[in-house]
Length: 608
Image (cartoon, rainbow, N blue to C red):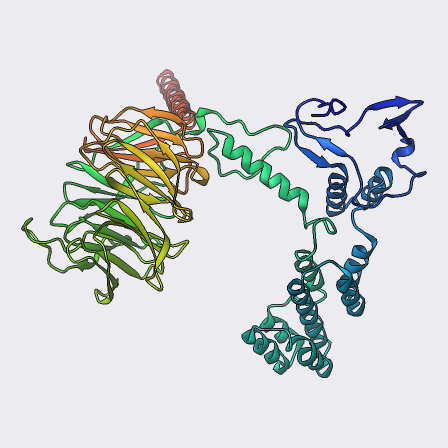
């Protein structure tokens, strides 16, 4: 860094050059600038592109002029127009060129002739200029229709829009607007707010995207930078786990370990054998658990983790132990499977079995598997299942009819569906992961090949990342399904003999949590891969974990010790315990006082 540039405090910036004071005036690079009344009244405003460099604490250089332009824009957005004008005068930096301001004023005032003339003078690519012109002409067309000037609107449509608009469906939609009898019905059909409701401002925001940022400051630029900075802080904070979106700008995000659920709040022992699967409903208020005892229990989790959950239904019907449960998008149905012969669909409100595929389950383990894996279709109205024996993927409706079957070129052993990306992700017996489009059933380009046996996997909420649990050697890897690259590896878990499932969890899915054969639960930070906590408590292999989407401070773990443990924050559990003790004491005091009052009244009656 240049010796003339000096950092002031933490992350603050100074102008590139010496800063001194002479007779009350600030000197920058030896030049005097008056500070009288906070305005450089004796200096002409410089062009927006001129200015010195500022240095950040990390050594990055940014333009002083760009910073001032962003501040001016922010002041105007905050309603401080006079302060913005004062900053422009004092700094000698204007937010925009005069031509840009004229362009902005032209759009806001509907001076389309002026707007078009200024647009031709701006540095735009040919395609961008055509797109911008189409937007302007569309606005002009709609405004003329709104004013009842149909013939003039048609001239714009035929002479200016039609020759340049390649999207014929859009052109047909615009043409149909002429038929609407009133301005209100036209605006509704066009999904256009109208001039009085700010259509020109929306147009201006669209047009700004075509202009070079060196000419026009992007919309709400300071808030965009603040948003980026806050997100980076959250990603770098190892314990951030909150849904609260209000953050301070005066200090960095620094959360404590107490934000992570690390205390066993409840132990559920209603299953009579090993618990193999757990899944929270999408609203996070219910839990489904599947056990080797061949039952599925639906739990009411409203009061968790402070209070023990209650049982809603105990579902019976599987001839073999179910090892998979999944809620439908609306949480009114539950999908379950034993991963070898069948799947079932249950009504969660009544506990009634709605569908069983196949209708009769195989009892002889020597018979070939008919259902190896299943998942909800993204539309929530169909179930997709896969078979190990014939390499076929079947789609079923909720009446039990198979509506489509397609054959794979490889053997599969597990599947997941991403509703966000409308994708079907399959794990093959050859330790590969392949992704298919659910609608077209075509295979996507990215393919992943693992070197270790994949025992289970899950997808991130956005469907881009796959979390693979591996055995021999035991590890958990995070893969990017778009780039086909390993993002992180999480070490420490013990797995060699059994299927152990990992999961994303916490606010923004910032954590990775997994069971383990050593009877413990492991929690890592997703982006740093640092091991944050190892939680003992179970007395058998922890088969799977599930983190509530509704409450980032609660997750559950299921184990071969026949129990499910509900984990919460130490602070919240301690607070609830304190509240309970105080309530008990208050009740006891009240009861004692009531008893004394009765005794006193009795004594008074006896004395009478």
